[in-house]
Length: 53
Image (cartoon, rainbow, N blue to C red; front, side, top):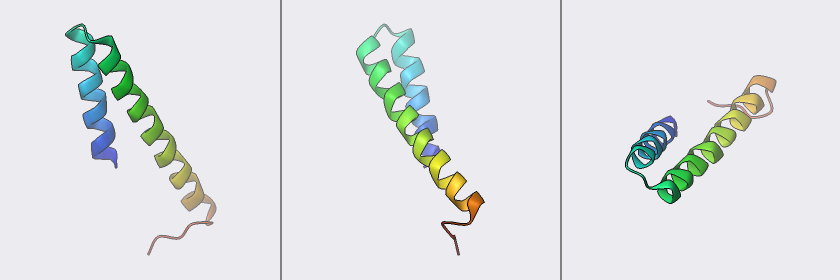
């Protein structure tokens, strides 16, 4: 999942530099959503609600 976040952030940066604001915004939004999901899963594991074996 972290690989996808990094890829989307790189795509957003490249699209921004090339003057494609719609693509940059979409990639940044996707990365932001994935970061939120990762943080929620991390907090659940930290609190012991969601166990990883």
